[in-house]
Length: 326
Image 1 (spheres, rainbow, N blue to C red):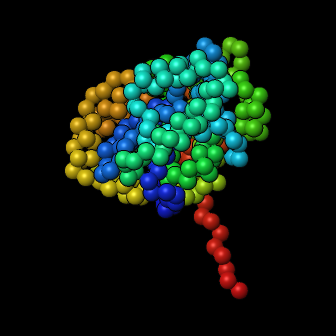
Image 2 (spheres, one colour):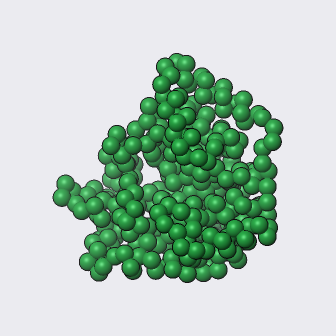
Image 3 (cartoon, one colour):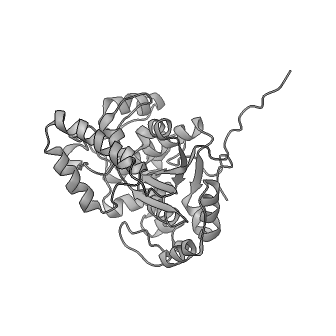
């Protein structure tokens, strides 16, 4: 099984699951959220993103915010304070309504109010023993989140052809990540990767989005050997054994309820549902892509050091140098 062997570090009451959209984050997170004493918070940062608006947010963040280590980021912090206190409702409509209401307030009123609300709600009693938070929007803020909240971090990856074909089928959007000068300079030009030209196909654009986000997560992982990497296709081989192992590595307790939930999820699902027939997932791309499309995708992925993966399954983590005592 392709899984990093590093023991995870961080607070046992905070679990952060990161991955590219359509890589299995919802399935894994929902299962982990059904372990003993756990509460799942799904996509707390998906509150104010609009492809037509370039993904920007009047709150100061949107899809794929860039938040560097050491940044204050008060609005972003208020949101994640709520997330890790498990006070963010998982109903998407409620979240968007609350966000729109907040946006109508003048910023000098809104920003302190958000911070005070987050602090007050975080202090309320009745918090679950473990909070599992999953995000597909945090690749450019992952280290800030790790520094600020000290969670145990899991990164999930999936075969790039499965991810890209799913994006194409469901119309998933990469927002403005390829348009931002900072991302171009720090992540694309540094690696000598060419942006899709004006005549690029949507499949080429999706491939670039997916490979960029995967590359960023992979570079974080290289700097943080204590983060746990899992591969979606491996989880699908024997889901109960594999996900039980993931849960154990981050300090979550598996129960009969978790097993029942996982078994009930093993059925046909549509769209963004966590339900899936697991045996069908590893080669799903073969029914979605023809040979010419695979060739088109692979030409884009070939520019990236990990070929569209977070870390290719055949590449093992580089062991840390041993310390010799003299």
